[in-house]
Length: 321
Image 1 (cartoon, one colour):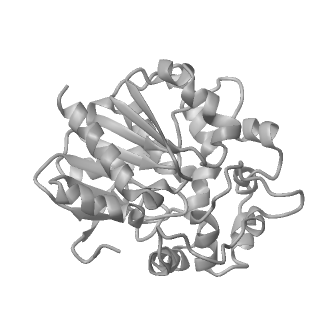
Image 2 (image 1 turned 30 degrees about the horizontal axis):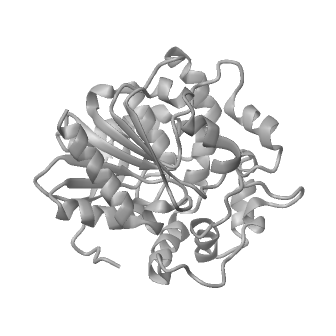
Image 3 (image 1 turned 90 degrees about the horizontal axis):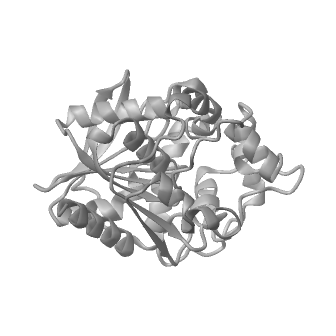
């Protein structure tokens, strides 16, 4: 593992919360890295070093609800409007008018919405694993997913306050992190009837070569302190975000974009592939490159050099516009 001792850590105030950010500063363009569930800024430790060593000014926050950032108790404090407002305050703190944004999982969703709400602040976006989905004006997201996948889809189970927290608490945090980060099945995460998703997920007996016990423990230690409720609250705010997004119905992402997904990411083959590889997404995100890599969901860990190279090639391409 690269040394993380040369990464600087700050606590900033933004949008009424305290946010922890990791920073490694080159003299080049500013790159904002946004993590997903269940991770922290450390999700990007490979890319932070690679990008900074090539001259980029790299900042990776713990998003609200995670790590050393504040975790408001109410799910209603986790709409995409809250998350984007946190990020605008972060950019203002660093006196950055326009930046490159890279997001994975929920961080990708945050990056898409930052680009949707404030394209004036975004030079370009690299979204990993989660594409930009249009807002369906007729059905709330949780109802759509429930109708599509049933009551035991992971995000449906997360909706009820306390349910997933109780289920996760049966395991130590290191086991929970292993169950997620080492997930290698391409299927949508659905538990058998009557079973909690965390019980359904397997705990691998051996680690793959791309991650160490030490790295997994870094995540586990943070979630031991913070718990998982902040992360669950993103799922619990989905319908409220949908309600508030009505004025953006039909809006497109206008900034230069790259979308990266692993061919074995959960649900890609069975659910999202036609959308990603067809023409619909390209009509909503006209200036987009789509890259399909061999890999799974946590591909920034699994294929760190490829992801770093894809980010850098995109930045260099956009810089020539």
